[in-house]
Image (cartoon, rainbow, N blue to C red; front, top):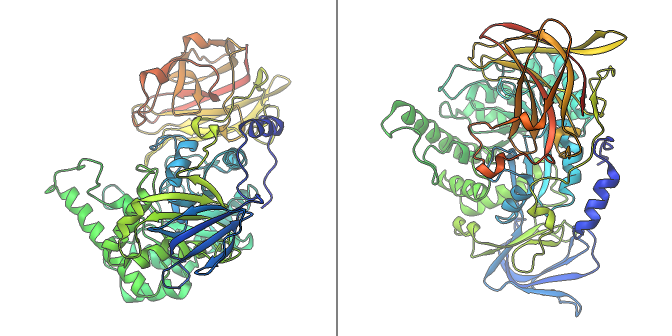
Length: 602
């Protein structure tokens, strides 16, 4: 797949030098042969498990069978007592800094340690795809597919994100335009948030109508992109099938599924990913959210029973079932194997759950000719497991080794690159001028895409941002109708690198200077870090233009309540900044505006 070129704010030469310095072994090019011998082979292709040998050469499976001869020069791994099987898939994850672990290198290792070799990430904004792909190429990591997000205005997925992260559509024409816009970033698939049901626990968000969804699917298919939907009710499942979606993500859980809905989903050829782990009401590692006899807890238990029942009904109806977890909404490590255990609890056999996690998941992404089964010529993404998981699914908790593209990336002998021990990409230098707002394409002077940010939720601030005339040039106007929340705000973020992935080293500067005027309750300037921390300082904003300096030593550390940062994480480093936010606060329901110009470091 041809990737977007990186922008100057994230120099290709610097990344190439970084990759060379860390010397990550190639995951697809080696003349050596590795022989895995004495393994119980579960090929997920339909052959009964047997004892045999597998040869890896040039990142592919070179030979496989009970009578394969081991070349004299081969590196030999004795897998006696272990099962050799394809690497597993998790087709629904969120690689977010509010997850556990929080950072990309550690998330990657968490998946490799549990045998996951391909994942879909539903968290990344399209602008971040290219730098994230570059970063991942320097790490030991699963193959990561990026999903472009499309929802409805005030719909699920749009209630906490601007349109540079989640596009908002409400008509067939707008759906086609949204797909065209995100396709320019070369996503691996599209995620459509089609169902606004809040599980009976909150007022519903808006939902996507069938005509809009059908147009979205049709346009995505023109680009060769599959469409997965966030769909959690029976009625919306029917609409998804009628619209021709490729994958229904999440369990249909508002009531037991009926035969007519099953027939529609099967006829459409739609895959089903239940993500049971995220809905499990009594989680092994968490306290109960409510007492067991609380009506809210009883409702969760009832919905989960429907989710389990419906998975078995879906599978028995011949609808292909794949595997995803929604991990990132809870801890990544251990999520995927627990999902397999829950699928067995729902009534699938261990072997059926393993096929769902390998062959069927590969087919859901149209990757069945490349991976998902152990067959000669396919990619050597494979794992060794202590025990026989096709008879005891809990054996999947005993992954001994993981190979990606034929390279040992987890287990005895794996040589983890130093990049996997670092939270972030190496810091880059940026020039003093961040943005003078002279460009007409929504990009900063650093060639990064400006982002709107406002308080989210079902009752959210409505914000618009545009350039206007200021003197002989232009300035940025931020205007907003604030929500009814007590801390409502609107802001414009000026990223320091593309997608806010590579942090900037600002230690050569002393602070931020900008011109500003407006009508707000109070104003602030914030610097965002590569994690979830932000450094903020209130500023005076009046009706007349004024130049404002914000020294770095006057910034105070702020962090979201859900992010568990240690005290040491709240010391100013100066080399981990990803963006500048100019913020306006006001009273609930107030209309505010800001005009901003000439943002630079001094």
